[in-house]
Image 1 (tube, rainbow, N blue to C red):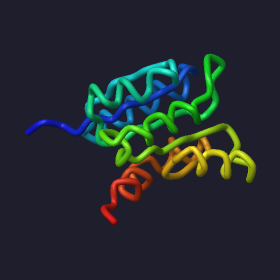
Image 2: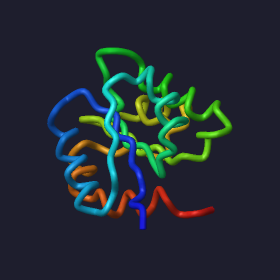
Image 3: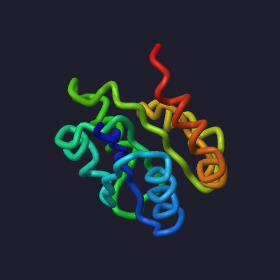
Length: 124
């Protein structure tokens, strides 16, 4: 049986590498990217079950990458779990507007990854 694929977007080695390890421990194959501008194209090619993304990037706007992902009919259904050091109300609203499935803090992501995956993958 083929393991499900998670696409992980991050720049900071920690917690990004910790997330990769946790996802692999949970039975996922993982593809990593560091450039938010490549998110939509990589997702269209790799066909992941979900995307996990650090919402903060020095390279480009992660929210723009999520918007492109949502605009493509081939990837618009892919759940996006985003995380940030802190999640103030304005960042939550901007993430929602971009199409993020849900936004959590970095600490919560590492502590409760399995629960977030279960929630993100629920079929409506």
